Length: 200
Image (cartoon, rainbow, N blue to C red; front, side, top):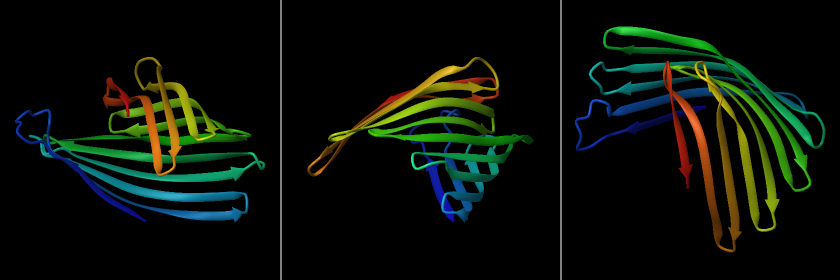
């Protein structure tokens, strides 16, 4: 079972483009063990976002997903999931709906010094679907690890764009030191998207 609340509050501003937002989430997942190497799951969730703007915008996201994890050998496995997402946006006296299929397929292969994987994913927001294909490599180091991922991301409009991430970890006697560089995209309107590049 899952439940959560988060929010964004702005102070000392009257910019209409920066409304306060409250977010709620409820969810439940059931695991199904078919054999020692095969496991399934069924999950349902509801997320609600309420914006303190002029239209009192409220976005409701209902999702259901069925997944399967299968070990193919001692070194390889895959995870597949298929679901459906339904978004309802209410505000300024109107209601808009966005719904459709979501899913993912993730294949992993263990190597002597880490792991490689391939991920195909279709996600969805109130502004439409996004399709991503990426490949990752985890390499264990003597005192830490290095992970790299590169791929393409495409919204329902426009051309595919490059995405990627690099994570570095160094284990210390009394803690850990990390650094990451990430480039990602998200759909912000039915015909526009935002690119985020972050160094942490």
